[in-house]
Amino acid sequence: MKKEQKKRKRRLKRKNIFLTLFFLFLFFVFGYYFYTLPIRTILITGTKHLSDQEIIEVVGIKEYPPLFRVSSYKMRKKILELSYVQDVKIKKDLFGRLTISILEEVPIFYNRNNHKLVFASGKEIESQTLYGVPVLTNYVPDEIYQRMKVEINEMNQDVLEMISEIEYQPWRSDDVMIDDTRFFLRMNDGNVIYVNLINWDKLDTYMTIYSSLGTAKGTLQLDSSLGNGITFTPF
Image (cartoon, rainbow, N blue to C red; front, side, top):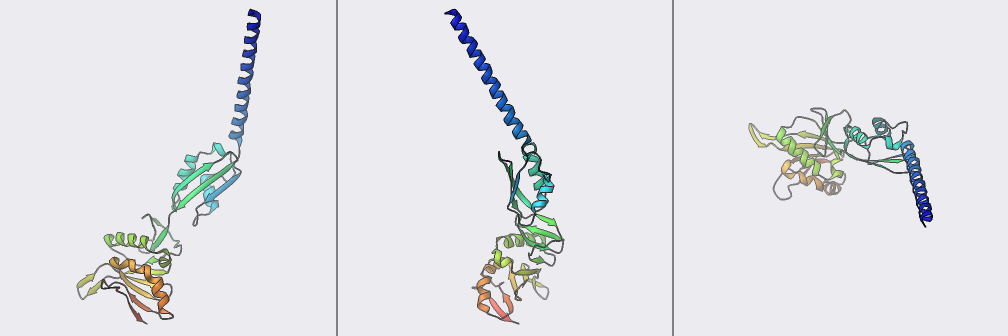
């Protein structure tokens, strides 16, 4: 009996040693696989103004290095340093795919006075690229400027794209200030618009107004607080 028990114990020990070595072998094999697994596919989503090549060069993965030896934290930090990036998420999978999901800043107008591109988030950066956004042509007092940014950010995107230039043009009568929040807008279609901050949301109806004008071009006044406050004067 004792001899049989000893044999069983030896068999169990051998079996345990074998299983331990087997799992260590698997751990080594898979560990080596993940350590040396190269980046096989790079998928970049959410970009409009940034190129894939620019992002790849910024994070230093041009040569497709081993996937799990590249720090997601460091890649994210480098991408967030790009002016046009608001947020970024990075994912890796076991097949060598690296996915970079980018949330870009949305440009809403260009301030020619200080040569800065203004984004929907309120962020401003020095830039010579306009990206097809309206151009603010002159200086606007700080308080009114901040209010103007909010109004532009909330307006209909299709209408915003139809604006060519924005000029701060307060309404004065002799030396009396009547309205210090009035702006003059030049539209890409040839019309011009007077609008103040309190009536800025009326611009969202511009597509309807435009379709009702036919081929006529002229001046729209949306700065009145009376009724619809819309007056059109042909050129």
